[in-house]
Amino acid sequence: AQKVTQAQTEISVVEKEDVTLDCVYETRDTTYYLFWYKQPPSGELVFLIRRNSFDEQNEISGRYSWNFQKSTSSFNFTITASQVVDSAVYFCALSELNRDDKIIFGKGTRLHILP
Amino acid sequence: ETGVTQSPTHLIKTRGQQVTLRCSSQSGHNTVSWYQQALGQGPQFIFQYYREEENGRGNFPPRFSGLQFPNYSSELNVNALELDDSALYLCASSMSLGSTDTQYFGPGTRLTVL
Image (cartoon, rainbow over all chains, first blue to last red; front, top):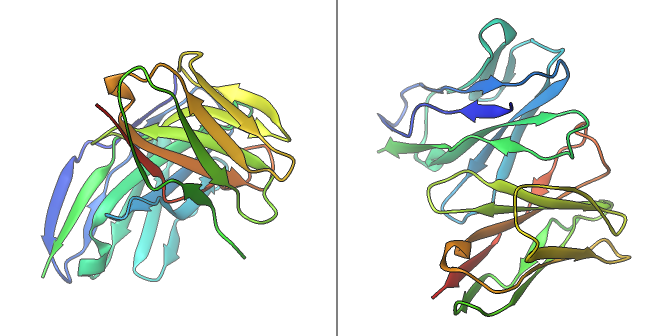
């Protein structure tokens, strides 16, 4: 069965600290895609990254970085030098090839960056 | 390039009523997916439309139905509203079928059922 688990319901850190959001997924498919989306208070889901199951290279985009490890079925997201504007709910998600294109979302991690 | 837009922003209905939510896909996108996000939860897939045909459906009853128009905009209809239908309804569009294309989300419609 497909499943995405974000064990951290809520995290608070002080501005400029680094923070890692955990994501563990379950799938029986060998070809799948993993995503991270950000949902600010306005409600719109903002796309951050998509990785396919054959590409385990870590990725860095500015202050954001992602660590994909198939051996542990994890796709963790790190924000370096956090800023107040990073405060939002972050969702990890999974999509399996040829499964109606539906995206399976985790329950999200609410991140508070304190000034 | 225009992003995904949804209307209305907010809506209040009473139990038993019917509601129609609208979505305009991003320019160049022919696939639209609908998701329901209950408070404190992640979005749940309702269904997807590709070139005016339903392409896949999540675990939602038949009173949730949809349409896609020739210009690829879409509607979500919910009949016989129940209190549990209160949620944020998100529409996402992508360039085509297949997980290779990223789905981009609109701002959502917040539906409250009293």
